[in-house]
Amino acid sequence: SGNTIDSADPSRLGGVPMPTVDPKEVPALIAELSGGSVEARRRAAERLGLVYPPSSEAVGPLTAALRDPDADVRANAANGLALIGPPASKAVPDLVVALEDPATDVRFHAANALAMLDAPSLAVINALVRLSGDPDPRLRRAGVTALGNLGAPASAALQTLIDRLTDGDVDVR
Image (cartoon, rainbow, N blue to C red; front, side):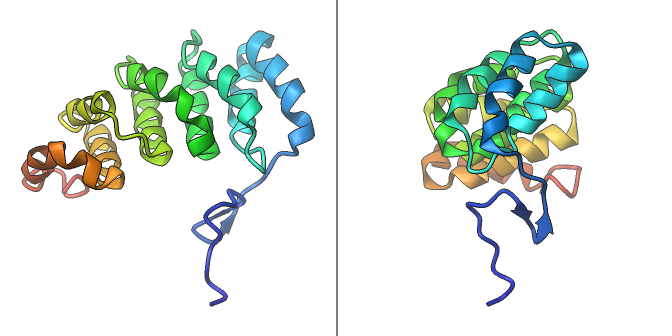
């Protein structure tokens, strides 16, 4: 089975190599994320999610970056938390808040992160149900996908998922 992908290794995604960041860079990236220019903060948020093995040290700073004034920093932070996976589960309440962000990309990456963190609380499920009704089909799709990834605990949202089977956007169905 040479086509098997190690899901624990973020350097392989769908068989496509991804760059990884050395854990030794984490302290410098955290410093950039908390005090650098907008470009430096965007880059640091993106790179902290690519540290392999994932850095639990980056979770707090990435969670704080969900409140950055720059939408790209917030989106990169949410994506970084998704890439870190379950060790980032303490960020779940902040990711639920990020589902209400005015920036579409932030909401999209927050939904993906919640799906990856496997934290099916009622607050998460309710927030994803709301997102699955968003006017933007990309966000509806992200909400539906995240609910589906949560599996049986998301059964409370089953009627919403059934309703989305008739969505006007084929990718949401």
